[in-house]
Image: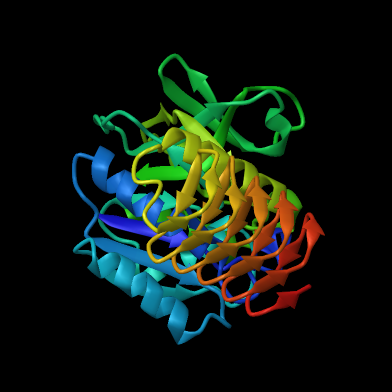
Length: 332
């Protein structure tokens, strides 16, 4: 089974942290979004994925491929790569992995974190669409159902026809059949909402041809697409995963949990928490920090921070308030 992850987007709403690191590789309590996706599906599916297919942007370097390969190899998966040269929509992104679209697999967009706590029963479905009930479905693709089965998929409907938002996760029994519909959309320039080739439209074509679509739900759906959302989601993950929080060194400090202290991290003479993630190798010294993230090898000294993100290898000194410091930068 394949795990297909389109991740060519630039993550503009979490800049500057996505300038160097693609959003799906940003860490949340010690594991990147991609790692969490792989681990979730390895746990809940009847068959463990053995191949990861990542659709990257044209300027993604070898370091990113190496990170993804390492994630896959640690989980006995083969890593494959495709490139989306131009952002033309979700169907176009999946279609860029055309040489790998065969057999069955999971298509998942790494824009959000989610939790699935029960094993997934695929039954006799051709496609399983993961959904979440929302108050305002006009911002999402939605699933319209007839009893237990899905009758239509509509991208960002103008009228309130369903409150079951499609969250960007699909099981597909026949990836080659999906590829056929994507190719048809692109070859005939059939564009949907936003003037783009929409994966929802490709799936709806399979649905109208008689494929059996069912839905599955998630227990939590958490946005990582903006700086405030990333901070909020990190706090929720810390609260949901209380084990193995303190892996680094704490010296002469006060910790108000939940606080994650990654391997090799140092908290020295500080007051930290709640809702703080201090990632591997980071340092917080002579500082007060709450509701914040200090990414790998970042350093905060002689500062009072809240609602802040300090990037990898970044330094924040003698600073009070809320800051957003990119990788390899210095503030103070």
